[in-house]
View (cartoon, rainbow, N blue to C red):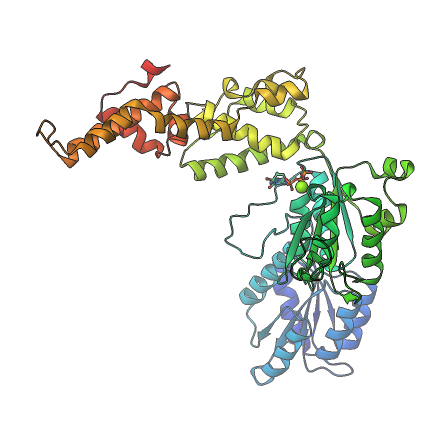
Length: 495
Ligand SMILES: Nc1ncnc2c1ncn2[C@@H]1O[C@H](COP(=O)(O)OP(=O)(O)OP(=O)(O)O)[C@@H](O)[C@H]1O
Ligand SMILES: [Mg+2]
């Protein structure tokens, strides 16, 4: 039951509001002026206050400010006469949720209270719901999926980290979403309209990383034929994501520590210090504690980065998220490939939940795409799953070799179609222009002949599997089925 405080010096109005709210199952207390109301709010937790503006001893405006100081989440609704609407607008600026003009009907009041309580519940839970990973509402950058308790905790930390500018170290196995977290922190922070610059420290050769990060002067080293800005300068005002930070050399670690401490650095070959305002987010799957012991990672840098650590749980530690992720990727691949796969069969989903997912979400995404290619029905069956999911004994290296090499297939389809005899013959015929009139040029007939050849070749290549053919020959599934019927082709012949 929600607890409401009604504040008005007009006893008649006070009583009628109280009656109306009690009728709607609210628990109601009353106060005759702002001063008493503030005392009550300090003594008891109310969900909501409905308050008049002009009252003796302490006005509604003053009381509002006091109440908000004590409990910023308290919802305050202001009741005001038409002539005082300006005051009410001011009150909203001070943090009142909204105002009601007198005379007040119980319908309006109750409707507004319900809306206010709903809004507050959204705000309260927002810390635990998935954060945005882009500023563009319609972007295709994807969604942050996570319904499990473990991920809600991560979302909560993200929302806290978004409010401050301290360095962050994101830790977790490969494919758990570290980069996604970095984006979520940036795009929910006050820096969201500034740049998010990413550098993968693991993939840059040791001798280049310093100039990549801090820039260099012209002639700083052989090949430096012009001045170059580094990532820290590019990210000024925004966020720099140092991915794979566990891979940087000892010398670089010292330089990074200095930027983190002083926000200044010296570009390579320069004698001038540059000052920047950059928020650093770092990520790695490396065992820092062990590296510190072995002396390969500096303890001071680790502590500097690890102010509020984010640990991403492995997928096998939050199997409850698997169906949500699967659903998300099914929708994603349906829209990318223009298919209508409805879901996984129960046994296929069970196998997905029982698997250990060493490659985490990235692997799950690949597995779902693999299934889209293998499956010829409308829902993914056990048979379409790669062997590593079905057989928990498979070692990591075997498991990789079982996975369909999607890129390989794409290329081989393209190669095959290019090599295709029927196709090249057809092109040849078409180009020959029937000098001796042996081929009559008829666009419709030629087009249909081409289509038939093309589809039958594509079906052959994909062993009659409809989804696989649609996907790789880039034909919408519906169109493919229509053409198969039109040309009297039988996919079963190609099994
Ligand atoms: N919670 C999630 N919801 C939706 N997609 C996710 C989630 N977590 C990860 N992904 C997706 O999984 C893939 C891997 O995520 P990401 O690149 O962030 O992982 P990572 O931890 O940085 O991996 P690595 O250590 O290998 O760099 C990406 O395609 C990402 O969009
Ligand atoms: Mg990554």
